[in-house]
Amino acid sequence: MSGRPVSVAVIGAGMAGRSHAAGYRQANTVFGRGLPPIRLAAIADANTALAEDAADRYGFESALSSWEAVAEDPSIDAVSIVVGNALHRPIAEALVAAGKHVLCEKPLASSVEDARAMVALEQGADVVTAVGYTYRRAPAIAAIRDHVRQGDLGGLSLFHGRYWCDYACDPRGPYGWRYQGAPGTGALGDIGAHIIDVGEYLCGPIESVAGGALSVQVAKRPIPLGAVVGHEAAPVGDETGEVENEDTAVFTARFRTGLTGSFSVSRTAFGMPNGLGFDLYGLSGRTSFDFPRPAAYLLDDTQPAARGRGPRQVIAGPQLPYFRGGYPMQAPGVGGGNAEMFTYQCRAFLDQITGAADPLPANASFADALHTMEIIQAVVQSAQAGGASVPVR
Ligand SMILES: NC(=O)c1ccc[n+]([C@@H]2O[C@H](COP(=O)([O-])OP(=O)(O)OC[C@H]3O[C@@H](n4cnc5c(N)ncnc54)[C@H](O)[C@@H]3O)[C@@H](O)[C@H]2O)c1
Image 1 (cartoon, rainbow, N blue to C red):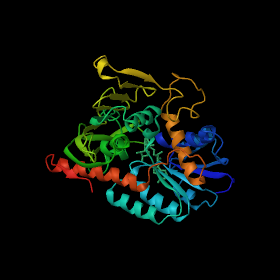
Image 2: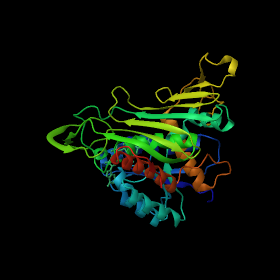
Image 3: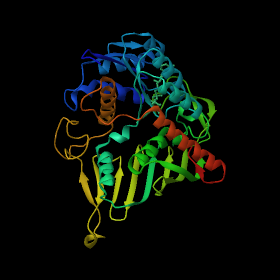
């Protein structure tokens, strides 16, 4: 692509849509001058007031009331899909047919069938198709991956990943799209997709799962009287809707290397607003990470003589991936978190589109995200078979 501006749009102005909008706005302020100018063209949402507010806040030229209007606008080059998962496939199909680059939120779709159709679309596409696994862009998680690859932990022996949230604890919380869909589209698809991706990012591909168990803690929820944004409370009536998918899930996994691990995800874990974390052990080291403290991680890679003295805390700073060039203040201990990860994700997408000379690591493909969904499907099958081992196809 030449140096002409790249025009971007965001479909969905809810919780995560605003994060994409903010990410595009910041994308040209990080990692040097590799990108052409970014034109912030449009934000589309069926909730027009929300689209207008987001366009105004993040400096986008227009607010549109339908995703179709984005697909039909020939001036738009690249689009983020940030709406409920059941809409990902039809929107991606229309955008790719219109020749637009697509960055789709996770999980890729609301069914494996839809996800496979999106992979077929990707295979024939002459545009970039990408999926946002934002946590790969957390400096501490990327640094931990470097430790693993450098052998700082020795041969890996145990992984435990968790993503514990509490957004579904309140039984008066409104019945939104997250509670509708087959088993696997609840906590597993919504937050499990992230920690499964992190587990594979650190430890390699998962080949089979076992011990799957799913449960629902709040069986019915009140229907909202109006629009709902993300996990926010909203006025509700007396009518209720049936929660169709899991609030909580656990399973074990076997990685291709032979490593075994365990995962637990829940949207009903009181007091944990956004508790993605993991512990990773090897024969000569260990590390732990918790997103509530995103700018630090624990590392014990001491020599045998010091074993048992405990891990040290590594404070994020310019020595970590993404931090140098990715934060305005190049100094350790200044924090960092969710918004920056979306900026790096948008930047990586734009690097991919423009063929940047020194790109950030590319985003996951639709095919990668289908694999995550196949793991989730295997967990559901394991649960339905009383915890049996199920290969990931
Ligand atoms: N990467 C992350 O950390 C992260 C975090 C949250 C959500 N997500 C993902 O982002 C996506 C959206 O989640 P959210 O929490 O922002 O949802 P949300 O419910 O807050 O927002 C979705 C928006 O889509 C709009 N919408 C619904 N139907 C539409 C249509 N036909 N045309 C245009 N707009 C329409 C709604 O009005 C709403 O504002 C999901 O795929 C979710 O899994 C990712």
